[in-house]
Length: 94
Image 1: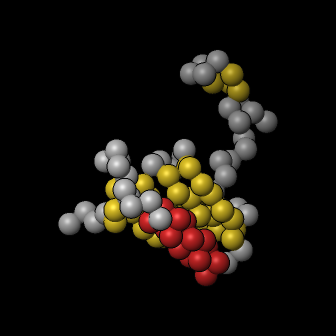
Image 2: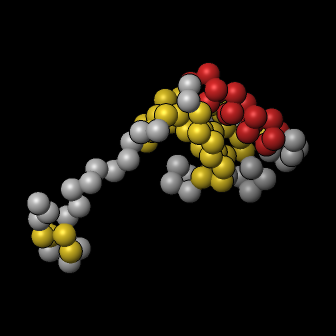
């Protein structure tokens, strides 16, 4: 049974949000614009997902993997493709 909420003028969904938990941050690079491009490995309801982008909610590329090892390989593939553009440089926050 759903409940009415006055805050959004509709009903509250009983369906939980899909799981998206960060397992590890694979790498970070500075883009030519100065923004930080990140690649992370996330645990989802369907397995592991590698996300590369400037924001977790707006990824530029994603790839699913059944195991953490495969997800790490996918993150490495994304890193190699990004490093092919010499304008992207590794980022460290030190």
